[in-house]
Length: 229
Ligand SMILES: [Zn+2]
Image (cartoon, rainbow, N blue to C red; front, side, top):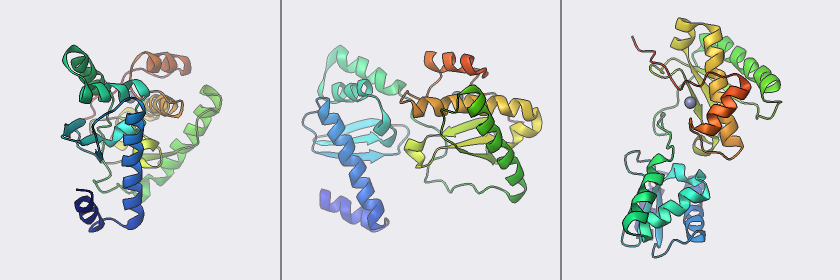
């Protein structure tokens, strides 16, 4: 099975990516075993957003977003696989509640910044630096802020470093044009709270920790507003 997997992957991935893929799967399997996983021999990381965890025999498939999951979520995966009855149903709920990013995945071609939008990206990036210094005590990493012409329903998006390699904040250009600079800065601040969550090892969500921090830094807690026509 391993050999079949290797040949399938080598046909369309370069050796570095292949090594990385195995590395990440091995790392995930190792982490799950550390919290008690039994019977599983092979682990494949997926990007399938409708099934987070599935297994058959000794092969387990887990969505790659769980690479960053905290121990209690990893334990839930173990109980889901090895447990039964009520415990297993509870574990299933914990897994389903884990925030798997729904944004564009890497399989979709990356959006390039429109040349006309560059000054806007620069201005937002400077705004990020200012807000970081004034509201977060400079605790956040410097980050690139980009404007998107693709985003239609979301105002902004924080792309996790964990799933995209480099973290990035994206602001909808449509949102900026329709609602103006001040509202776009509110959205930026909201996404910066998500950045703070990831950088401090918290789950990226809109729960209590998010709301508390959002209040502290003066961000609007609302998650999204429809920008559609
Ligand atoms: Zn949010």
